[in-house]
Image (cartoon, rainbow, N blue to C red; front, side, top):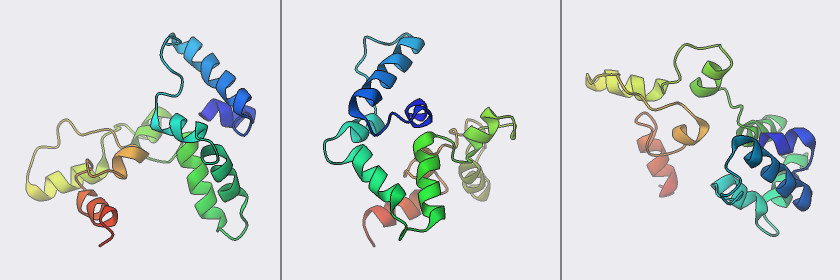
Length: 139
């Protein structure tokens, strides 16, 4: 996905597919479907995906920081512990919210899940589980 954004092929369906296939060849898993992730499935969906993303990102009524945050999430460079560890700015990719929740309960902080955008926005994050569940149920 990040490669498609970098090369500007994300709005062109054929260009997007070619970029996905090229990246899968590099990783050696070309025999698996290139649309095998939630993000790719969304991006390839007719009249949704890339066109909806493009409308949102170009809508000047939406604040620049919300559009920027979405772009960062799609590109995979949200400043989570996982990303910051990847670029050498942190020592551990472990989820800081899970660590705080475990310390509050007096549990061990060994084996923390990686702090990614997806992890923080799921009920699997011990520090965000209640908030995510409440949001999901629209309470």
